[in-house]
Length: 214
Image 1 (cartoon, rainbow, N blue to C red):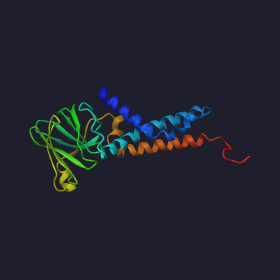
Image 2 (image 1 turned 135 degrees about the vertical axis):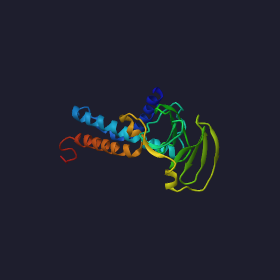
Image 3 (image 1 turned 30 degrees about the vertical axis):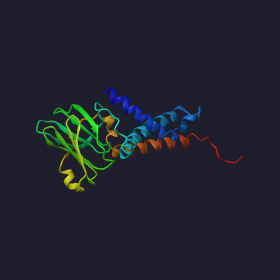
Image 4 (image 1 turned 180 degrees about the vertical axis):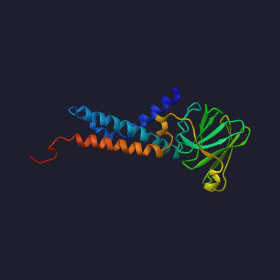
């Protein structure tokens, strides 16, 4: 949990660096507290919404492979393949990660898969083997349950329907406040609301008569 909190904090700071332009509402000392509150809430929503989008873009250029195995990225709803013994294999497509859970959905470990943003599925092929297949035929990986890479090779593209048959979309236990990090489809509306609040705070910050000629 400490690793989760620390890493999400780092990602939030990175997102804040990309959104510091809209922080202009904080710059006026005479601004009423209500406007400050609108700006504060808007900034928080922008950061929460932008962080998963940034993480997804980092994955496209293969820059998300630094997260440790003990780090659990919020999964939300994701493709899941279950082994006979009850082990769950979760494919986190937006961030290019595989995460392993036990039969009671307790997180075990996770690791990065180099897919460069491509859609992929992870499914068991043996007692201690996981095969990772991407939609556009970039690479095929075989991992052990401990995350060790066993083999890799190129192959022909796989149809989306066949790829989806490897797994089922399931809910992975996730705290509600971490859902924006699970998928860009959750984070984009939050980001848009935050931008709107910052826009309102900035617009209302203008003094009456500002911009008019004397």
